[in-house]
Image (cartoon, rainbow, N blue to C red; front, top):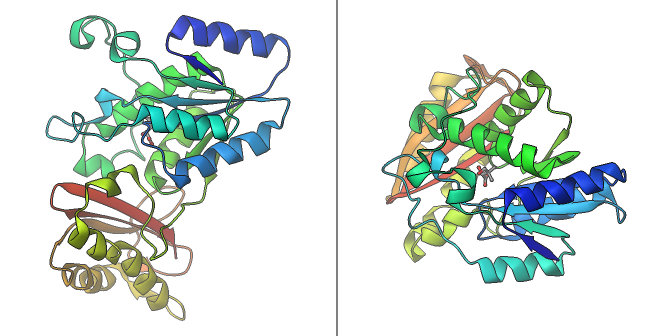
Length: 286
Ligand code: PAF
């Protein structure tokens, strides 16, 4: 496994592979990898096959964190990540630093951003106004550096995957996006690097996100129900966990991300819940 930290070296390698018709599968990450990330890596390998190359990027992207968010204390363990990726048979890990990605002192040599203007607005976009601008910008940069044929993203970040798919279609990136299923802990909590922040009590109560998804599934199994009514019920359900503070719960069309008035089978649900300063998200197709 090769570790590459400069853009020039990564692009040189990717161009060489392109010239020989070698397919490139790419998994962008912010590191602190868990089994969910590794399932994306496995999927990338399945798609490009043994003759293809799998690249994983590890980069905690500052532009997708708001000023009051957890950038400085975002969990990192590069040594452990590299060991896991090596065991998975990854070909290249791309680990740039901030000076490489956003040149100039504190990024002053950088001034071009990519903004998706529709799907990025509600939910995560409303709670974290500059978040998706940072995601679409860094993902564009990574696509231009790694030159993938296929890139794999996780379903847990449903809105992120939707925004990236739209960006790829709108801007004609010549690559395929795959969205792979969410991996869950035994009790149903979606795997996330941020789960590490939870203390024992918060961790025990964090399963309320999964239970809320299950409760909504059950509510629409036989009949449709008004979104306002279901939101009110779920708000009560979630805040019964004393450490949970609901940020949002939304019901929407999975393609347009527009809110629906009536929730039925096929409606997409997403929610964000704080436990202390830790904000967890989850979603499901009902
Ligand atoms: O999902 C993530 O980990 C990040 O948003 C991504 C896609 C790696 C961009 O920094």
